[in-house]
Length: 233
Length: 374
Image (tube, rainbow over all chains, first blue to last red; front, side):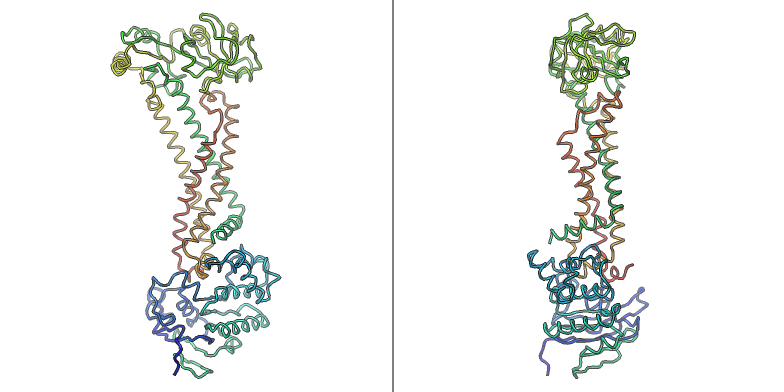
């Protein structure tokens, strides 16, 4: 019997679009536990990104319940502080701020923390160094390659030591070498920090690092491959 | 946190340098116009009040529909009628008008009877020479006139087809109205200005100052074309009051236009940066910090525009002073620090007002939609 408190519980989640005519997510229930990597697989348009956005509180849930570390969420409790402390987002397109350097982009994610400027700077530099971007930290986003941008975006996602990393096609726009580096880094982070990661992907290389693979079709989770043998649905 | 927010705001201002420059430039021109209008309007009010709100003078009389003393003309018959009123202790008539030198430069000529009695009250202080004698062609010239015409005491002022005037004294006045003028005896001025049967203004002193209302009622009754004003209440009188209102409306309109330009610029910014604002929300920036960034951007633009606008208004003022001598008399000598601080205050006000609507849009963005926007 597993007595560990789940990190996130999703129950009967629904999301409608176009005035209720399109159901993007239908009756999804999953449980995410610490220290595990979950891959969300399915064809394009099956609702992977929508589910990720709903879990990450980037979009409103129409029906269903989300419990973060056992606590049900209400609209009032989901604020920027919660989002900052709990989630780390990795988007398919890096979504860095173009007017800032790579280091400043990481610092931007840290400015609400009670850190001095030098502490914040040091933290940003350490994260970029870990991602092999020490030589690029003072370069503007537009001056670096796509792979470097994506690595910087991952460094930013990890800046606040999030409990749950939500990654939407994190290696969709990078070469296989960078892809491998990114995945290795994320995997190491999850295991070391005992956090969790939910990756939306249709790349089997990505799903190969997952402990659990959730298959989605037409907004529903249709099957689960659990390599550890734990039932998460 | 605030320092980083301010840095990010600054980078945003520099992100589209041409647009920022054009916004800044148009704001600067508007603020310049506003500063200049306000300064001229205040100066005009000060000039008029300084001229007409005299200590020891109970009532000032001018033509009813005159916008300034130059356009006021009172027939001598009415002057005599007022002088003969039993409540009136003394009367100082003033004649004034423009004169051009042979080199086309223009000055104002004041004819004042009894300069000794009234010099202090008009803020005139003698800086050299002596006061002119009655019934002579002697004049007092403002220092600025002497300097601009390269004249000195003892020289003669020559106007085309007029007898020469001898400069016997120089003066300066805190009412800049007088600093572009020469002052001479009333009869001399009447002759030079061809106003033998008219006076521009009358200053009345009463035996009993409590009779002011009674005398005003009498003047109004007997002379409907005249406007008697209680000394000290000039700035609220007749057409002048309307002029001040007009100037206020124009100044206020310029501020509205400045605000609209800025609101429009920031609405475009919010639209173009929708995705970026979504990213900031996603990485945990709170709404207040996003609003703070917009306020800083707005302040950077408006305060820079304020500085540029104030410097331009000084340049415009100098240009107006040298190029438009007809209105020189109404212009302030300079723009002082209080005017600068006032302009800055207005800039801050515009900055804050202008970011309210764009910030509201920015903070209300749905994160997921913002992130997916193109």
